[in-house]
Image (cartoon, rainbow, N blue to C red):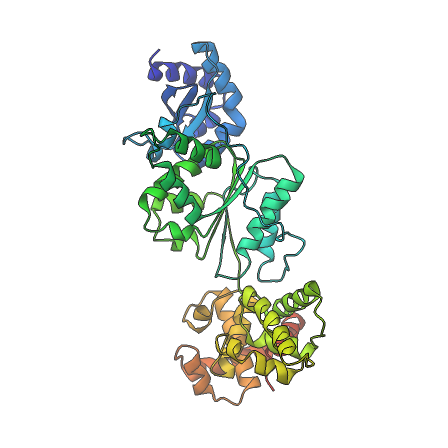
Amino acid sequence: MNVDVLWSKILEQLKSELTSLSYDTWFSETNLYKLDNGKAYIIVPMPIHKKTLLNNYSDNLKEKLNSLTGTNYELIFILNEEIEEEEPKIEDILIQDNNKIKHENINNNLNSRYTFENFIVGNSNKFAQASALSVAENPGLLYNPLFLYGNSGLGKTHLMHAIGNYIVEHTNKRVLYVTSEQFRQDFVKANRKDDEGTNFNYVDFFKDKYRNIDVLLIDDIQFLGGASKSQEEFFHTFNNLYNDSKQIIISSDRSPEDLKILEERLRTRFTWGLQANIYPPELALRKEILKKKIIANDFEHDIPDDVIEYMANNIGPDVRKLEGAVTRLVAYSTIMGGEKITLDLAIEALKDNISKGIGEKNDIQRIQRIVSEYFQISMEDIRSKKRSANISFPRQIAMYLCRNMTSESFPKIAIEFGGKDHTTVMYSVEKIENEIKVNKDLANIIEKLKKDIGIV
């Protein structure tokens, strides 16, 4: 039977069963693309149709297809843009052969040291941590894909491994963690010829590794930039897993909108689920990270609070650098004959680390950074001319603190905030002063920020 005629018959039945609203919303713009190898490919107008039709109408559609054709079909929902008119891709040329070797023992590549239990949560990462745990508890059901992004060294990889380890521990789902570079290398291998002049074994391995899984975690997706063929294959891998309601977790150093090095059709898919940004850790979280690192390693010498405070204020936001600074400090103490760790020793031991750390040129920049971290906006935003409330209010607080905690003049402060007129600073200072008198919550925030800034 012609697929158009077949689909028309199915639509007629659905129209008589559903309300006009449901039919017009979910079926009026659908088409049956093809029946192939036990699969029925149905074209839908938008990504939301895929999930709705799969979750709410798949049984009904399968029943109608079986009644009209006598065959049980697997439903594949696709967008028009996903229909390729080019030569067959890996999924098309792969021959399912029971005699072929199965690759059931592919390593999931998870690092068991990274768990939710040892991920330290603060204001800067609690949304990302909560999102990751929600996905781990309900893989394939919520927030698919989950897209984690933020600068290097903030904990994206830790969270990805934590998700994978949680799923492995609590379910029998098949999990795979890879970097984008590993994906690219595997794809290149899948296109090589073996001794017999074919690549079926390589293709079979690639297919089994990346499609026959329940959860795919792919780290540093930005490194697929420039690899057009690998991007195309990941596009098909993504579609295959997504259509089968398999969980996808992706990390990057920037948001999907900023990944201009990748194809637009990939960037669009990355926004289908949930995006979670990990911000640089605030001062309190940096101190907690240092303390947990010290406890975990059970160092012979105690590290006093003033040393932890010094390190948290001067090393920078990169978690790996913070942990590395603890290791360097302890090693330096050992090399110096087991000398007791003091603030003077820490300053000497970490002088190279400090020079590569935050390195604010003055107290105004220090205040700007700490206020930016607290309100989870960028340094660029706080110095900009943007007037949205989530930026202008923190900027006014920062100006107030600069005036009250430094000896800088209004014009000098204005220059540090993007060259604004000094009267803008005067207005901001006066506004915050008046607000503090009647708003206890704001007064508490100001006091906390002053403590974090700690300028003497």
